[in-house]
Length: 160
Ligand code: ROI
Image (cartoon, rainbow, N blue to C red; front, side, top):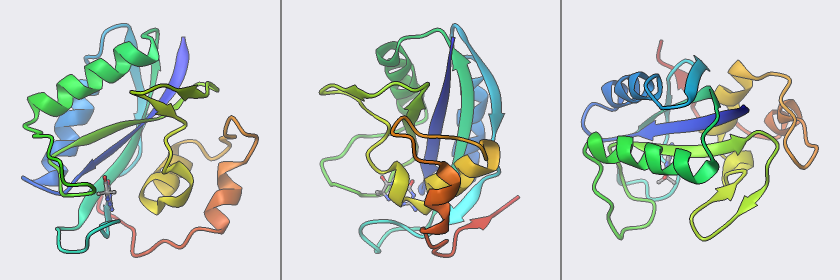
């Protein structure tokens, strides 16, 4: 059984509902249990600015799935909620589900980079993660709380 943190993000088609529906879908993952989730936050887009603000959050699950099987399941949820993969890099999206951390594992495959490559410099990931895992230490030994002291909030605002 591994403890896994999943980042949720959306900025199209009623993003708050997208995230709430995604959290409900996470409750139905096989061989898994949704432990908790952060509040939802409004955030400024990272990347191109000519797109709507995002809603972001982080969930914690316990799972017996392999990283690849979990990735498949998350991509299925994204597709079921109407995500269309476009070529545009860093464009708007109806739902993004990212594996941020998979226990203490470091994974580098064509499909998966864990810890998520953007984890430490995205305020919309780090602060919701800190909310549900204040004592978290990354596989490289860094404390999440120390990363937060270096990272501006950039208008990140809890919406609930
Ligand atoms: N910006 C914000 N604020 N939140 C996201 O979830 C997000 N996701 C992305 C890019 C386009 C990098 N920007 C984002 O994939």
